[in-house]
Length: 284
Ligand SMILES: Nc1ncnc2c1ncn2[C@@H]1O[C@H](COP(=O)(O)OP(=O)(O)OP(=O)(O)O)[C@@H](O)[C@H]1O
Image (spheres, protein in one colour):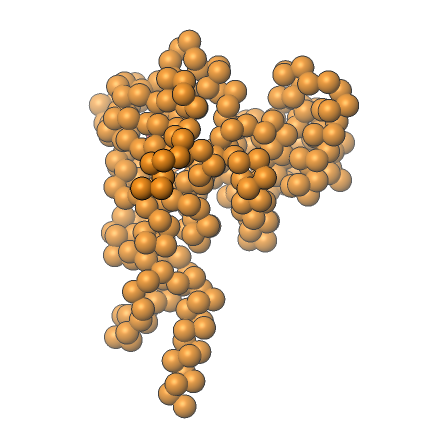
């Protein structure tokens, strides 16, 4: 109810899409709205259509039928550049995104295209690199960085532009667990600070617990959407759809297999550990 009162910044209605030469609907009549400032995480098995959906929102491909509206603009060939200017997109493989000779040049690229004055540009680049903890690498060549460092720099490029919408397509997949945690916390902070709307596509199921809403895509259809805690506690559906269980739910699932009664509601791993300790102490 509360969501309906907020502004929709992304609206996808009856999206249908097949790649040329293949009749299969990779997007099979998908509809949803995303509110301004909302963080939506998208999960689904390999090949379920998540990246295709993200590309359709960014106008990188056009739908066979249906409609995408971004910040009040209906996406079509006349509006595609305006739509894209509202979206910061980080792909899984940042190598395809680097254009600058140095890390700093690369982060500055979008700002230069917007003719931002030099002093502002230097300050924004420095701030963005500090936020992703890559300021010490400002003069390095992007090609010489590790996969995780490249993903951080790609993210800095997006942060510097302060777009209304940030789409991360498996953009933390090369980060180590600590780095991934840092980037997710950073996103959370930036979302509060700049009121970004965030779409994250991820195979890291634990990461999705922090989102405002979770979408499950299966063979091109949006089969479930709602509060992450509700969806993440539906272990039967997640397993049926070939998805991982979050760690806490994984432990609960194993306990259930041992015929141990566990709470139905979603618990993260620390909550499961606390719950187990309580059970043990009550047995003493
Ligand atoms: N350029 C393309 N040409 C033809 N088919 C494609 C193309 N890109 C993707 N596909 C197919 O479309 C389907 C959906 O792909 P997509 O990349 O959207 O899935 P995904 O859910 O993002 O997968 P993953 O989790 O593996 O990244 C897959 O069957 C894929 O093989």
